[in-house]
Image (cartoon, rainbow, N blue to C red; front, side, top):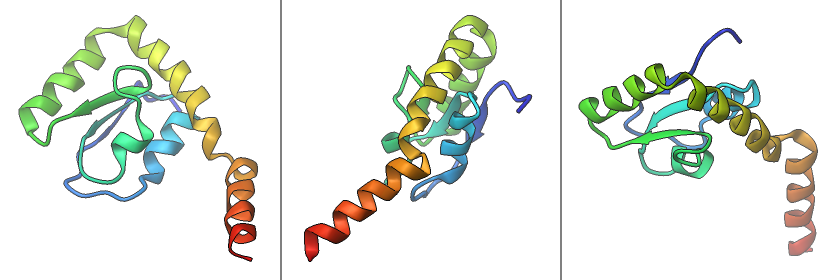
Amino acid sequence: MQSQFLVLSSDCEGFSLVLAEAMACGIPVVSTDCPFGPSEIIDDGTTGLLSKMDVNYLAEKMEWMITHEKERKQMGEKAHAAAAKYKKGVIMKQWEQAYLSVL
């Protein structure tokens, strides 16, 4: 809860619960744009930053997050709001609709 931002440097990721959890806590994220995950959770430039799959690009995004305090805090607020779509009530309605659609 006292972190300024979270960094995820995965080469491969599914649905990254750690990204959703950080965002739910109002923590912006920096992540590699690996297939099937981060880009579906992070709105690049709004709720966090996506990096190419390269350590130098990732370092640049981390440096930006460190040096732009105002924007970082705004991203955290937007991340918190965006994470609401992963709340249990929202997800359960989607599961119910999926089950009912096959009946």
